[in-house]
Amino acid sequence: MKIGVYVGSFNPVHKGHSRIVKELIDKKILDKVIIIPTKNYWDKQNLISIEHRVNMLKFLENEKIKVCKKYSNYEYTYQILNDLKKEYINDELYLIIGADIMPKFHLWKNIEEILKFKILVINRDDIKIEDYINSFQNKNNFIIVNDIEKIDISSTNIRNNLDEMSKYLDIEVYNYIKNNKLYLNNLEK
Image (tube, rainbow, N blue to C red; front, side, top):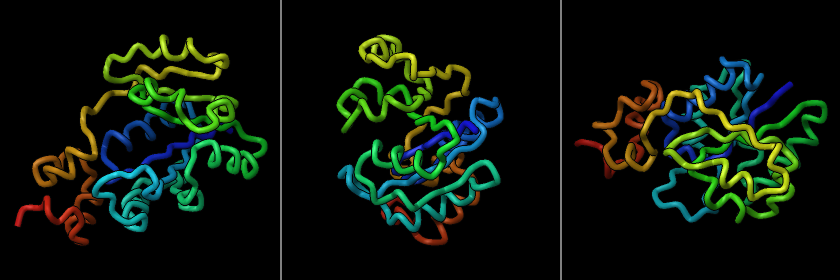
């Protein structure tokens, strides 16, 4: 089985995130996706609790999309991948990243361990992905995905303009944010 591993803060999860996951499965690039929200080790601003982010991600869950909090405490992606490989011994793991990650991907902790896995790079922002991939020895482990419709939005923009940007959120996520008074300083009174 081809299993995607999607790691991020998802603060909040938006339609850009969900479209990537759903299209990778619908296009049969992956059989399953495990979404892993991270704790606050990246020094991100305005990061709400892991529990709220997991709850919002749960709206995406089905038999092929799973949200996993088990690895949320891990500080580095290579740790997550190595432990998942122990759990999914007979499956092939694919790390899902956006092209915007590529300029700094070589700086990730224990990058050589990460490059033992397949890397799905979601093309966006007109980044010359090949230039970055060619700098790695294991360049054959990279798979560029070009045909996922791009939604030009960021979680930061959503947090800063929540009601105005609600069209980029699934209705369940938007209602969860409103009902739990998340990003309160950004909500209309």
